[in-house]
Every structure is written in C-alpha cells, then in structure tokens.
Figure 1 (cartoon, rainbow, N blue to C red):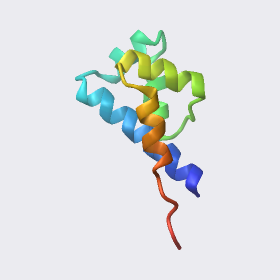
Figure 2 (tube, helix red, strand yellow):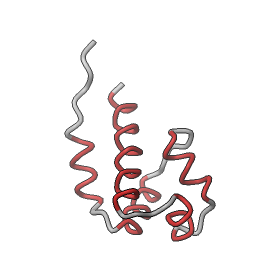
Figure 3 (cartoon, rainbow, N blue to C red):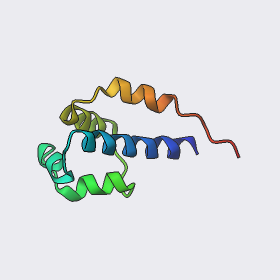
Length: 80
C-alpha cells in the first residue's frame, strides 16, 4: 500500500512542479524528446516511471531529485 501511495505522490508532485513552472504537458514532453501522451500517461497513473526517467524529468523541471526523494520517504503508511 505504501508503494502505491508513494507512486501517487510522485506523479502528483511532478505534475504540480510542471504547472508551477507554467509548462504544458507538450512543453515538458518536447524537452524530454517524448510525445505529449508520455507525460499524460504518467501524470494520470497509467504509466509508472523508472528511476532514470524521474531524474530526467527533474532535470528538465529544475527540481532537486533529492528533495523529491525526501518528500517521498516522509510518506507515512495509511492505517486501516
């Protein structure tokens, strides 16, 4: 369950950083040499990202990947 929560937080955080920079999905995709659908799929949760892909996205967004990892590691498991 914690893995799912972290994946959700990852995609939501990357989306928020993109929006805060004023970038459209197509802008980010172009900088990554990808199609817009690539960004749409990972932001919607349809596609999971690998570690290197996350680093590439962080680099384009000028977002510190260490800060992102710290944020993900602070995620507490949901109690049932």
